[in-house]
Image (cartoon, rainbow, N blue to C red; front, side, top):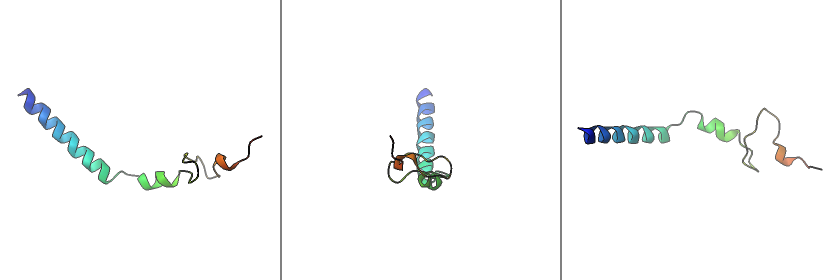
Length: 55
């Protein structure tokens, strides 16, 4: 009985993982928010801070 419950749980988790990889909501918008040079997330509409000269 316990093995059957564990097997059903693992199957359900695998199905959820497959559907999560197929269609993650907002993945394209998150990719657009990253800086193409350094890969950090930009906050707001301004440029990333990696381009500024320090010192």
